[in-house]
Image (cartoon, rainbow over all chains, first blue to last red; front, side, top):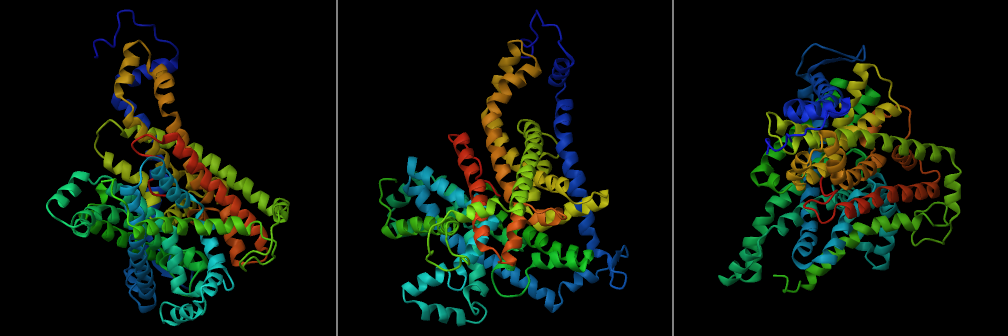
Amino acid sequence: MTALSTPVTAPPAGGPLQRLSNLLYRKPNLYLAMLLVPPLLWFGVIYFAPLLTFLWQGVYTYDEMAMAATPDLTWANLLALFEPANYDIILRTLGMAIVVSLASAALAFPIAYYMARYTSGKTKAFFYIAVMMPMWASYIVKAYAWTLLLAKGGVVQWFVEQLQLTPVLQFILGIPGVGGSTLSTSQLGRFFVFVYIWLPFMILPIQASLERLPPSLLQASADLGAKPAQTFMQVILPLSVPGIAAGSIFTFSLTLGDFIVPQLVGPPGLFIGNMVYTQQGSIGNMPMAAAFTLVPIVLIAIYLSIVKRLGAFDAL
Amino acid sequence: MHSERASWGLKLAAWGGLVFLHFPILIIFIYAFNTEQSAFSFPPQGFTLHWFSVAFSRVDVLDSIKLSLQIACLATLIAMVLGTLAAAALYRRDFFGKEGVSLMLILPIALPGIVTGLALLTAFKALGIEPGIFTIVIGHATFCVVIVYNNVIARFRRTSHSLIEASMDLGADGWQTFRYIILPNLSSALLAGGMLAFALSFDEIIVTTFTAGHERTLPLWLLNQLSRPRDVPVTNVVAMLVMLVTMLPILGAYYLTKGGESVAGSGGK
């Protein structure tokens, strides 16, 4: 190949641009470096270095009198995370992230399963687009739509009244820890919004993992005498675990870091994101904000190491 | 296996799921044409186009639209350049730290928005840059790079390298090969990636909260409206427009990249 690429009548080197591009073709390492330097520089200077600088402030001392951080190293901020008030925030956020992931998986599975096994051609494309459009549609508008749906006298209430289910709704809203005075100020309402917004992120990985399931496995299972339900429980479901795990990475980490939805829907009570926002903004306590930022990062790292064992990374 | 029929329960769950995904979006479209002043009641009272003219005569709305469009265009351009460079560097060569580079590209979008926002804010403070349109663009470009990168690298992987070798064998120099072989091959993937990056930037709110300073992008304008529900009808109209601007690019990107191994937009947002 290389011998052929230098023809006998080599065209004379043209302008500087051409000479440069020829040089780069002959020196692949120089070419690689030129390609990599701009993105590396960009990410290094405005993302990585500042991220580490910011997180490092988590062990700085915050002087409440001077309203400023001083570089005296301390564990105080990290220990403060375990104070009841702060710990509550972490548990509330983590609990929501787990429940939302489980519910999304349960809702997403039938859609993904139907898409992967019972649709083809135009119907499959239709399903694909029908899942992608809500996924990409504006996040803030989706959250806004839910405030309209859940509001007093809003759409959900209207449907509940038409179906004569008002007592049921009242009963659910009466359950402590889940309910509230109205749907839009209840944990339940907040849970609905989270599940709605992140659901498409769960459907697509599950669908992809089911799509890869070889039909011969299912035939073998049937040939060996398994009933459809057995095939489902012992072949299909275990093999879709990587997809579910991959999808849950999105639902888990997106819920963990969110601070707009908790602000718009649900009872008072901060999420980790709200706490970080308040600490760095109105309070100006950067060390505490940094300590709180470490929480989702650490939780996501732990979560990733768990789902990695379930094969999530092969299904991404 | 496809000869089996789906049970009616599964069919209902699947189609019901689609209805669930689209119903809130439909509600936004319905309420934009509602005649009522406080548009929380359902069913809507009547049909009107009046609020569109009200919304488009509001200076604050127009300013926010203009700002968001400018930011999305600039951020998309930067993301296209950086994402293509990174994809070209990573698709064939193996080198030390390659995994690290691809992880680095994905981190700004994989970590929660508050983390990315605060990292950027720290950078701007350290460099002494006043928050404004410039800092918003930098922030958006940072998390949009991976979208373009994913699209372009998928196309690079599908493009046979022998095409490039053939071009060189036939006497084209590196520049001609790039101009006449590589670029035309990439163009639709690049365009798809750009459209998705545009939609992502146009809608972004969490990172923007930290980098915007006194500027108010369209999502920030919307969020501000929600905490002060003064003029609901105008909010509804703007919400519908934002919905359209973010949903239509995904259709375009889909048609530009379909038939390939990986279709645009299926990755994380």
